[in-house]
Length: 411
Ligand SMILES: Cc1cc2nc3c(=O)[nH]c(=O)nc-3n(C[C@H](O)[C@H](O)[C@H](O)COP(=O)(O)O)c2cc1C
Image 1 (cartoon, rainbow, N blue to C red):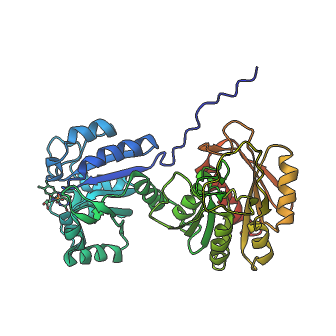
Image 2: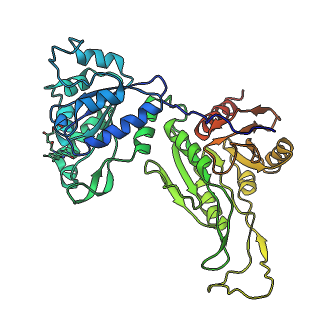
Image 3: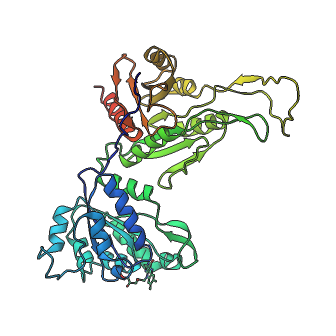
């Protein structure tokens, strides 16, 4: 009997990366412990610098235990193996992250003050710097804080906008730390080679829902994970991203623009509008081919009779995009097949005037709907077929963009 159980595929996008993680004196300091744990699991090496006031909220011991490295706490610590920790950390780190960044630390770093280890390190750190402000909304909106943030941005520091919501003190507004996914994506972006910079990339994801009555609809098993992975990867590699997504159980990320739609026709309208400005369009959504001819405004009651629902064809979005394709625009489609994968994929590529098709056999374990992994073939118009191994969907997305860039350069 064939054993289809595979080792879970390990995705470690931060493997070998050195992160210096500054923690200042904000109430969200406790979240840093959880985030650091998450970043470690993804392969990062982490050294923590905790300010004196930060240590009133969380203890150095927690971070030494989580990172496996001493937690740097003082500029002049005689027990510290390094005499000049600010220089040593600056030389070691690929990126400096300050999370949470208090109003105080933002003010000091924006004004070149260097009166403790973290602020001194900030001045000596030459590589990418990322700051995650977190504070009461009135503090955040204060012009002094906003001016300081602008100063940092003008000097190339990435200051990530906090999220709106209710903060610890009960006030509502902007000031909450973003969730782990945003932190991770911003760190990955800071570390990435921005080879998609300047490109507008339109991505679709998820299923569509074709309503029968207010309660029922026809849909499919697409989770939206593949499309979201593509959109995230494009963002990390520097592109301007638009995501048009059908209903999924995942929140669209706050760091790029998303349009949420329900039906195939709604998706068609949004995609055609967004396609005008797109350099690359990747249609990963599983759009319904058919939709009920009629919609019942009230719930259809059960009866003893058989029931027939008449379906009509929806707009073939991919085919229409292929027909409208502008010179230089790249159009990528997906096909999920259960048999004759390569033949069916190539036929679809030709019929729809695609530049690349990503074909996946959804009967393979670990591939297709709802998995975090996928196993795909990339097929181009010259029938070059590239078989990728079973990979995490974000790695598949990386490989798709590598291939697109080769198409672009003509190789
Ligand atoms: C309970 C408590 C919570 C605080 N939370 C925040 C906060 O979330 N953000 C912030 O900017 N300041 C906050 N403060 C004020 C800072 O701790 C204070 O400005 C301190 O000087 C910051 O020190 P740092 O340089 O280590 O950031 C808080 C103070 C207290 C007492």
